[in-house]
Amino acid sequence: MKVGIDKLHFATSHLYVDMAELATARQAEPDKYLIGIGQSQMAVIPPSQDAVTLAANAAYPMLTAADIEAIDLLIVGTESGVDNSKASAIYVAHLLGLNRRVRAIEMKEACYAATAGVRLAQEHVQAHPDKKALVIGTDIARYGLKSAGEPTQGGGAVAMLISADPQVLALSDQSCLLSEDVMDFWRPLYHTEALVDGKYSSNIYIDYFQDVFKGYLEATETQPEALTALVFHLPYTKMGLKALRSVLPMVDEAQQATWLAHFEHARQLNRQVGNLYTGSLYLSLLSQLLTDPDLKAGDRLGLFSYGSGAEGEFYTGELQANYQQGLDLGLPQRLTKRQRVSVAEYERLFNGQLAWKAEDQDLDYQNDPHRFVLAGQRDEQRQYFDQQAEKQL
Ligand code: CAA
Image (cartoon, rainbow, N blue to C red; front, side, top):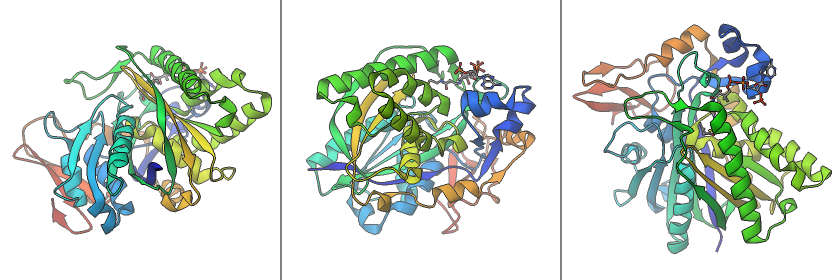
């Protein structure tokens, strides 16, 4: 039985900052950000969006009443959690109106957690083919204003419906995993921004990719040429290019050219959004499927997931006949229609997040066009609002 991704949808903010403008403001050459880092625009997440609202905004447009009825597992992968006890998945299940009989949990292992969710959901559906699982990777990447990591910020959520006989991608049973204790990127509980050893993290990423990629090929006796394209976690799009280049000597020149050409499609949308931690690999998959004209049913895609700390996994998926039907087809246009903000406005929004303190707080959400917004905090409880239904949740 085939099990895999049946639907794939994305949400981010309606605001972005231009990377050439940000580079100039930081006394850097624009080409450092545009080419050296590989980012053209960066999503600016306003205070009215958090990991919960991004997740719900990503999922609700793709879910039918029949999907909601069949979903008995919700896994939210995030490293931007809003509570140390209560899972963001509980809030998300409530916002989406999921069945009360759903198992709703939050998972954490840096940018890797959504992949853990997908793999567990796959096993769940294999055991219960009449059920569906909803897996969402949702994050806001924050390193701090004027930090080296600043041009690799961003944010958003990718929602995936996992089912039997999936429309989009049938996932391989086998995968290759690696996890070790590495201090390349972390965020102690008292920090709102990540701590990172940037160059070290980039080197570890490549080491992990090579290890699990080669491990997968060996264990499954797969020739690298059997993979039409390789899709990567993209903390910044140059990172995926570096990893891809590191394995090009394994294939002949024609295959190298094919992989490089497909990769340009896989990074197209990530170039406009930036990092979104857990969702990044799956935004890249969406980018590949939405923008690449040279794909066909039966093509096998390799997926590399990496979470600092560190955990990596490589697995594959086979493209299904009507894969376009399960995709977020309006996404490229939505990204084009976003509003550009100045560097000063981006800095104001960056500093305007709900503060980690007990007092009541109100957030300005009037200009946020998304259905689900964070309206503030009352009696130490987050206040979510459904703008479509005009009701407090
Ligand atoms: N034109 C073209 N290219 C230029 C240029 C110019 N004018 N000026 C500089 N460059 C190039 C540099 O040569 C360099 O290219 P290479 O990496 O290919 O050598 C690139 O631009 C970046 O320049 P620097 O190395 O000087 O950049 P930096 O020191 O300011 O920091 C960074 C870069 C380390 C990625 C930093 O942004 C960072 O720490 N980011 C966060 C950490 C991160 O994303 N790590 C990735 C792996 S960890 C992971 O994947 C998990 C996760 O999501 C966080």
